[in-house]
Length: 204
Image 1 (tube, one colour):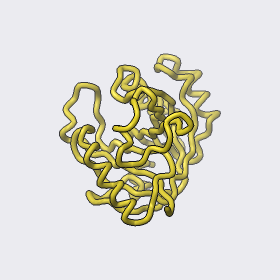
Image 2 (cartoon, rainbow, N blue to C red):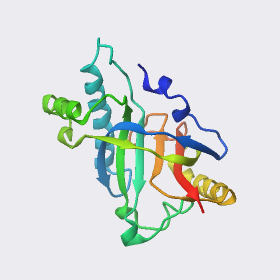
Image 3 (cartoon, helix red, strand yellow):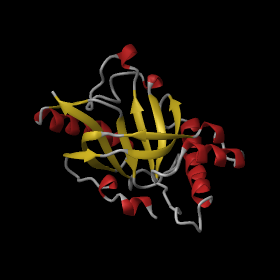
Image 4 (tube, helix red, strand yellow):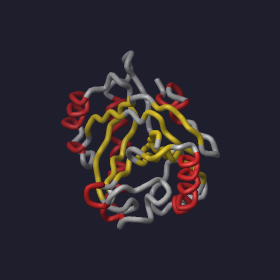
């Protein structure tokens, strides 16, 4: 089972802002904090890909075999400390040292936390093996679009998504979500990147 092929709608977004409904999804994930792009951020990103492959390999040859390698990241701030941060100014209002994130890769619903911990015990050679955990999240009604090119360009794309949400009487209600359809490593060109920018919303 290829996760991307099974959940085509989940991994698809238009070049223009749109409203979508996202159902519950399961992930292998690891928590972090601080600005994205640090050495530890990239180390965790590389490690989660290796760890998910190890979980996949543990089921190879069974009726539960799967492949999944698209890295996703959920970002948020502690609103009790910094207040409400909207979509359009998410990366420009607060010191990114206060940013919290969860790096994740989607997995089938039948993968349990116990299975993840069992693989962690067998693969202590993978950095942060004991820190990986099962995570479930239901975004529900969301606004999204496909951002092409460098991450710095999101400073223009996210305000466009914000204007669309506001025009439709919607406000941000949860974590900012980025789905990296094209893999990248630190130092690589970002010109070819394709990133789904997705934010859960509710009626104003």
